[in-house]
Image (tube, rainbow, N blue to C red; front, side):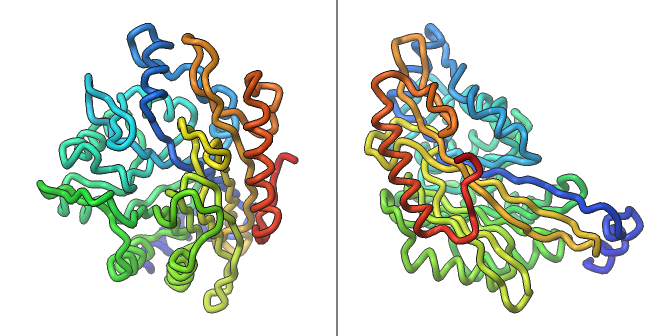
Length: 359
Protein backbone atom coordinates (compact mmCIF):
# COMPACT_ATOMS: atom_id res chain seq x y z
CA UNK A 1 0.00 0.00 0.00
CA UNK A 2 2.88 2.34 0.79
CA UNK A 3 4.44 1.55 -2.62
CA UNK A 4 1.12 2.27 -4.36
CA UNK A 5 0.74 5.59 -2.50
CA UNK A 6 4.32 6.58 -3.41
CA UNK A 7 3.66 5.76 -7.05
CA UNK A 8 0.44 7.80 -7.06
CA UNK A 9 2.23 10.69 -5.37
CA UNK A 10 4.99 10.57 -7.99
CA UNK A 11 2.57 10.47 -10.90
CA UNK A 12 0.55 13.40 -9.52
CA UNK A 13 3.65 15.45 -8.83
CA UNK A 14 3.36 15.29 -5.04
CA UNK A 15 6.76 13.69 -4.69
CA UNK A 16 8.46 15.66 -7.43
CA UNK A 17 10.80 18.53 -6.78
CA UNK A 18 9.59 22.08 -7.13
CA UNK A 19 8.28 24.94 -5.07
CA UNK A 20 7.55 23.86 -1.47
CA UNK A 21 3.92 23.35 -0.47
CA UNK A 22 3.02 24.76 2.96
CA UNK A 23 -0.02 23.96 5.12
CA UNK A 24 -1.05 25.75 8.32
CA UNK A 25 -3.06 23.77 10.85
CA UNK A 26 -4.76 25.57 13.76
CA UNK A 27 -5.86 23.99 17.03
CA UNK A 28 -8.06 25.42 19.80
CA UNK A 29 -9.06 23.91 23.14
CA UNK A 30 -12.27 23.03 24.93
CA UNK A 31 -15.51 24.43 23.55
CA UNK A 32 -17.79 24.31 26.59
CA UNK A 33 -21.48 25.10 27.15
CA UNK A 34 -22.24 25.83 30.77
CA UNK A 35 -25.75 26.66 31.89
CA UNK A 36 -25.05 30.40 31.90
CA UNK A 37 -23.93 30.16 28.27
CA UNK A 38 -27.08 28.30 27.32
CA UNK A 39 -29.28 30.81 29.16
CA UNK A 40 -27.49 33.75 27.55
CA UNK A 41 -27.69 32.23 24.06
CA UNK A 42 -31.44 31.79 24.49
CA UNK A 43 -31.84 35.33 25.81
CA UNK A 44 -29.75 36.79 22.99
CA UNK A 45 -31.86 34.88 20.48
CA UNK A 46 -35.13 35.96 22.11
CA UNK A 47 -36.19 32.41 22.82
CA UNK A 48 -34.12 30.74 20.10
CA UNK A 49 -30.53 29.74 20.77
CA UNK A 50 -28.18 32.22 19.14
CA UNK A 51 -24.39 32.35 19.26
CA UNK A 52 -24.04 35.47 17.15
CA UNK A 53 -20.94 37.49 18.05
CA UNK A 54 -19.36 34.72 20.16
CA UNK A 55 -16.61 34.15 17.63
CA UNK A 56 -16.64 37.18 15.32
CA UNK A 57 -13.32 38.58 16.59
CA UNK A 58 -11.40 35.29 16.53
CA UNK A 59 -13.01 33.90 13.35
CA UNK A 60 -10.67 35.63 10.85
CA UNK A 61 -7.69 33.94 12.54
CA UNK A 62 -9.41 30.53 12.38
CA UNK A 63 -10.60 30.95 8.79
CA UNK A 64 -7.09 31.98 7.69
CA UNK A 65 -5.74 28.53 8.56
CA UNK A 66 -5.86 25.77 5.98
CA UNK A 67 -7.51 23.43 8.49
CA UNK A 68 -8.76 24.22 12.02
CA UNK A 69 -9.60 21.81 14.85
CA UNK A 70 -11.51 22.34 18.12
CA UNK A 71 -12.53 20.03 20.98
CA UNK A 72 -16.34 19.86 21.18
CA UNK A 73 -16.68 19.08 24.88
CA UNK A 74 -20.44 18.80 24.96
CA UNK A 75 -22.89 16.35 23.42
CA UNK A 76 -25.52 17.63 21.00
CA UNK A 77 -28.26 15.82 22.84
CA UNK A 78 -31.34 17.29 21.17
CA UNK A 79 -33.85 19.60 22.79
CA UNK A 80 -35.58 20.90 24.60
CA UNK A 81 -33.75 19.88 27.80
CA UNK A 82 -30.27 21.31 27.27
CA UNK A 83 -28.02 21.48 30.30
CA UNK A 84 -24.66 22.59 31.60
CA UNK A 85 -22.34 21.02 34.17
CA UNK A 86 -22.15 18.25 35.26
CA UNK A 87 -23.98 16.52 32.38
CA UNK A 88 -23.73 18.72 29.32
CA UNK A 89 -26.02 18.95 26.33
CA UNK A 90 -26.08 21.78 23.78
CA UNK A 91 -28.19 22.66 20.74
CA UNK A 92 -26.99 21.83 17.25
CA UNK A 93 -26.70 25.52 16.40
CA UNK A 94 -23.74 25.73 18.77
CA UNK A 95 -21.72 23.34 16.61
CA UNK A 96 -22.99 25.15 13.52
CA UNK A 97 -21.66 28.44 14.93
CA UNK A 98 -18.26 26.85 15.56
CA UNK A 99 -18.24 25.66 11.97
CA UNK A 100 -19.19 29.14 10.75
CA UNK A 101 -16.27 30.51 12.80
CA UNK A 102 -13.94 28.48 10.61
CA UNK A 103 -13.43 25.13 12.33
CA UNK A 104 -13.11 22.19 9.95
CA UNK A 105 -12.92 19.35 12.49
CA UNK A 106 -14.46 18.71 15.90
CA UNK A 107 -12.95 16.28 18.39
CA UNK A 108 -15.51 14.26 20.35
CA UNK A 109 -13.43 11.85 22.47
CA UNK A 110 -13.48 13.58 25.85
CA UNK A 111 -14.71 12.95 29.38
CA UNK A 112 -18.13 14.49 28.67
CA UNK A 113 -18.95 12.65 25.44
CA UNK A 114 -21.27 10.20 27.27
CA UNK A 115 -23.04 12.82 29.42
CA UNK A 116 -26.27 11.95 27.58
CA UNK A 117 -25.44 8.27 27.27
CA UNK A 118 -25.13 6.24 24.08
CA UNK A 119 -28.09 8.04 22.55
CA UNK A 120 -26.51 11.45 23.07
CA UNK A 121 -23.17 10.31 21.67
CA UNK A 122 -24.84 8.88 18.57
CA UNK A 123 -27.01 11.94 18.11
CA UNK A 124 -23.88 14.13 18.28
CA UNK A 125 -22.36 12.09 15.45
CA UNK A 126 -25.52 12.43 13.38
CA UNK A 127 -25.73 16.19 13.98
CA UNK A 128 -22.09 16.72 12.96
CA UNK A 129 -22.64 14.57 9.88
CA UNK A 130 -25.64 16.72 8.93
CA UNK A 131 -23.46 19.82 9.29
CA UNK A 132 -20.92 18.20 6.99
CA UNK A 133 -18.05 18.83 9.38
CA UNK A 134 -15.22 16.38 10.00
CA UNK A 135 -15.21 14.70 13.41
CA UNK A 136 -13.30 11.89 15.11
CA UNK A 137 -13.22 10.18 18.50
CA UNK A 138 -16.68 8.64 18.94
CA UNK A 139 -18.52 6.18 16.71
CA UNK A 140 -21.94 4.50 16.46
CA UNK A 141 -20.33 1.13 17.19
CA UNK A 142 -17.13 -0.85 16.78
CA UNK A 143 -17.86 -1.64 13.16
CA UNK A 144 -18.13 2.05 12.33
CA UNK A 145 -14.86 2.81 14.13
CA UNK A 146 -13.15 0.04 12.19
CA UNK A 147 -14.48 1.50 8.93
CA UNK A 148 -13.70 5.17 9.67
CA UNK A 149 -10.29 4.81 11.31
CA UNK A 150 -7.88 5.76 9.88
CA UNK A 151 -9.20 9.22 9.08
CA UNK A 152 -7.08 10.70 6.27
CA UNK A 153 -7.47 14.28 5.03
CA UNK A 154 -5.82 15.69 1.95
CA UNK A 155 -4.97 19.34 2.65
CA UNK A 156 -3.32 21.16 -0.22
CA UNK A 157 -1.84 17.93 -1.50
CA UNK A 158 -0.41 16.72 1.83
CA UNK A 159 -2.09 13.70 3.40
CA UNK A 160 -2.79 14.08 7.14
CA UNK A 161 -3.91 11.31 9.45
CA UNK A 162 -5.90 12.41 12.53
CA UNK A 163 -6.55 10.37 15.69
CA UNK A 164 -8.35 11.34 18.92
CA UNK A 165 -8.36 9.65 22.36
CA UNK A 166 -9.62 10.32 25.90
CA UNK A 167 -8.49 9.11 29.31
CA UNK A 168 -12.09 8.41 30.39
CA UNK A 169 -15.76 9.37 30.36
CA UNK A 170 -16.43 10.41 33.97
CA UNK A 171 -17.28 6.85 34.94
CA UNK A 172 -20.16 6.58 32.46
CA UNK A 173 -19.85 3.39 30.44
CA UNK A 174 -21.36 2.72 27.02
CA UNK A 175 -24.49 0.58 27.44
CA UNK A 176 -25.55 0.03 23.85
CA UNK A 177 -22.33 -0.50 21.93
CA UNK A 178 -21.30 3.07 21.20
CA UNK A 179 -17.54 3.21 20.60
CA UNK A 180 -15.29 5.74 22.36
CA UNK A 181 -11.60 6.08 21.47
CA UNK A 182 -9.92 5.50 24.83
CA UNK A 183 -6.25 5.82 25.69
CA UNK A 184 -4.93 2.30 25.22
CA UNK A 185 -1.34 2.06 24.09
CA UNK A 186 -1.75 -1.16 22.13
CA UNK A 187 -4.79 0.18 20.28
CA UNK A 188 -3.12 3.55 19.70
CA UNK A 189 0.00 1.90 18.28
CA UNK A 190 -2.13 -0.26 15.98
CA UNK A 191 -4.14 2.71 14.73
CA UNK A 192 -1.02 4.82 14.15
CA UNK A 193 0.38 1.94 12.09
CA UNK A 194 -2.89 1.74 10.14
CA UNK A 195 -2.86 5.49 9.49
CA UNK A 196 0.71 5.33 8.22
CA UNK A 197 0.01 2.32 6.01
CA UNK A 198 -2.99 4.15 4.54
CA UNK A 199 -0.68 6.81 3.18
CA UNK A 200 -0.68 9.53 5.82
CA UNK A 201 2.43 11.68 5.52
CA UNK A 202 1.78 13.64 8.73
CA UNK A 203 0.11 12.05 11.78
CA UNK A 204 -1.77 14.19 14.32
CA UNK A 205 -2.88 12.75 17.67
CA UNK A 206 -5.35 14.85 19.69
CA UNK A 207 -5.53 13.56 23.23
CA UNK A 208 -7.69 14.30 26.30
CA UNK A 209 -5.45 13.86 29.35
CA UNK A 210 -3.87 15.48 32.39
CA UNK A 211 -5.20 16.97 35.63
CA UNK A 212 -7.78 19.73 35.64
CA UNK A 213 -6.65 23.24 36.62
CA UNK A 214 -2.94 22.31 36.83
CA UNK A 215 -0.70 24.56 34.73
CA UNK A 216 2.11 22.06 34.17
CA UNK A 217 1.94 18.63 32.59
CA UNK A 218 2.47 15.57 34.76
CA UNK A 219 4.63 12.47 34.35
CA UNK A 220 1.78 10.48 32.77
CA UNK A 221 1.43 13.09 30.02
CA UNK A 222 5.18 13.22 29.44
CA UNK A 223 5.46 9.43 29.29
CA UNK A 224 2.54 9.12 26.90
CA UNK A 225 3.94 11.94 24.74
CA UNK A 226 7.27 10.09 24.60
CA UNK A 227 5.42 6.94 23.55
CA UNK A 228 3.63 8.81 20.76
CA UNK A 229 6.87 10.39 19.57
CA UNK A 230 8.44 6.90 19.47
CA UNK A 231 5.48 5.74 17.37
CA UNK A 232 6.41 8.33 14.77
CA UNK A 233 3.61 10.87 15.12
CA UNK A 234 4.25 14.47 14.07
CA UNK A 235 1.86 16.55 16.20
CA UNK A 236 0.49 15.81 19.69
CA UNK A 237 -2.32 18.17 20.74
CA UNK A 238 -3.63 17.95 24.31
CA UNK A 239 -6.69 19.16 26.14
CA UNK A 240 -8.83 18.58 29.26
CA UNK A 241 -7.16 20.55 32.12
CA UNK A 242 -9.24 23.70 31.27
CA UNK A 243 -6.06 25.72 31.69
CA UNK A 244 -3.08 26.13 29.39
CA UNK A 245 0.00 23.98 29.74
CA UNK A 246 3.37 24.24 27.97
CA UNK A 247 4.07 23.41 24.35
CA UNK A 248 7.38 22.34 22.92
CA UNK A 249 9.15 21.04 19.85
CA UNK A 250 11.06 17.82 20.52
CA UNK A 251 13.28 15.84 18.17
CA UNK A 252 12.72 12.23 17.19
CA UNK A 253 16.31 11.03 16.88
CA UNK A 254 15.40 7.70 15.28
CA UNK A 255 13.41 9.30 12.46
CA UNK A 256 15.39 12.56 12.46
CA UNK A 257 12.35 14.81 12.58
CA UNK A 258 10.85 17.45 14.87
CA UNK A 259 7.57 16.79 16.68
CA UNK A 260 5.18 19.34 18.21
CA UNK A 261 3.88 18.51 21.70
CA UNK A 262 1.10 20.69 23.16
CA UNK A 263 0.10 19.56 26.63
CA UNK A 264 -3.06 21.66 27.00
CA UNK A 265 -4.72 24.46 25.03
CA UNK A 266 -7.08 25.35 27.89
CA UNK A 267 -10.63 26.54 27.30
CA UNK A 268 -11.78 27.95 24.00
CA UNK A 269 -15.05 29.31 25.40
CA UNK A 270 -16.68 28.64 28.76
CA UNK A 271 -18.28 30.15 31.84
CA UNK A 272 -15.50 29.09 34.17
CA UNK A 273 -14.52 31.77 36.66
CA UNK A 274 -11.03 31.28 38.10
CA UNK A 275 -8.24 33.32 36.52
CA UNK A 276 -6.49 30.51 34.66
CA UNK A 277 -9.73 29.11 33.19
CA UNK A 278 -10.87 32.41 31.69
CA UNK A 279 -9.19 31.79 28.36
CA UNK A 280 -6.92 29.55 26.39
CA UNK A 281 -4.44 29.28 23.58
CA UNK A 282 -4.54 28.51 19.92
CA UNK A 283 -1.54 26.98 18.24
CA UNK A 284 -0.64 27.12 14.57
CA UNK A 285 1.56 24.42 13.07
CA UNK A 286 3.23 24.74 9.68
CA UNK A 287 3.83 21.62 7.63
CA UNK A 288 5.81 21.84 4.43
CA UNK A 289 6.60 19.55 1.55
CA UNK A 290 10.17 20.42 0.67
CA UNK A 291 12.03 20.22 -2.60
CA UNK A 292 12.82 16.59 -1.80
CA UNK A 293 9.10 15.75 -1.87
CA UNK A 294 8.92 14.87 1.85
CA UNK A 295 6.26 16.50 4.07
CA UNK A 296 7.55 17.61 7.49
CA UNK A 297 6.43 19.59 10.52
CA UNK A 298 8.47 22.82 10.28
CA UNK A 299 7.51 25.11 13.17
CA UNK A 300 4.66 26.36 15.35
CA UNK A 301 3.56 29.46 17.20
CA UNK A 302 0.74 30.34 19.56
CA UNK A 303 -1.51 33.12 20.76
CA UNK A 304 -3.94 33.46 23.65
CA UNK A 305 -7.50 34.68 23.90
CA UNK A 306 -9.94 35.62 26.64
CA UNK A 307 -13.49 34.31 27.14
CA UNK A 308 -15.44 37.46 28.04
CA UNK A 309 -18.73 37.36 29.93
CA UNK A 310 -21.80 38.98 28.37
CA UNK A 311 -22.79 42.53 29.14
CA UNK A 312 -26.56 42.84 29.27
CA UNK A 313 -29.23 40.39 28.13
CA UNK A 314 -28.78 40.90 24.39
CA UNK A 315 -25.02 40.31 24.24
CA UNK A 316 -23.24 36.97 24.41
CA UNK A 317 -20.09 35.31 25.68
CA UNK A 318 -17.26 36.31 23.36
CA UNK A 319 -13.80 34.98 22.50
CA UNK A 320 -11.46 37.99 22.38
CA UNK A 321 -7.93 37.63 20.96
CA UNK A 322 -5.18 38.82 23.28
CA UNK A 323 -3.99 41.27 20.62
CA UNK A 324 -7.40 43.04 20.71
CA UNK A 325 -7.55 44.26 24.33
CA UNK A 326 -9.69 47.23 23.27
CA UNK A 327 -12.62 44.79 22.97
CA UNK A 328 -12.43 43.58 26.57
CA UNK A 329 -15.70 44.67 28.26
CA UNK A 330 -15.47 47.32 30.91
CA UNK A 331 -15.11 45.67 34.29
CA UNK A 332 -13.32 42.58 32.93
CA UNK A 333 -9.95 44.10 32.02
CA UNK A 334 -8.40 43.01 35.31
CA UNK A 335 -9.54 39.42 34.77
CA UNK A 336 -8.06 39.51 31.26
CA UNK A 337 -4.78 41.00 32.53
CA UNK A 338 -4.40 38.36 35.24
CA UNK A 339 -5.14 35.53 32.79
CA UNK A 340 -2.71 36.92 30.22
CA UNK A 341 0.06 37.40 32.77
CA UNK A 342 -0.40 33.91 34.22
CA UNK A 343 -0.42 32.15 30.84
CA UNK A 344 2.52 34.22 29.58
CA UNK A 345 4.53 33.27 32.67
CA UNK A 346 4.03 29.57 31.95
CA UNK A 347 4.74 29.82 28.24
CA UNK A 348 7.75 32.11 28.63
CA UNK A 349 9.35 29.78 31.16
CA UNK A 350 8.44 26.35 29.82
CA UNK A 351 7.79 26.53 26.08
CA UNK A 352 10.53 25.16 23.87
CA UNK A 353 10.73 26.59 20.35
CA UNK A 354 7.05 27.61 20.23
CA UNK A 355 6.98 31.43 20.30
CA UNK A 356 4.04 33.81 20.57
CA UNK A 357 3.03 35.34 17.24
CA UNK A 358 1.36 38.55 18.41
CA UNK A 359 3.30 40.32 21.15
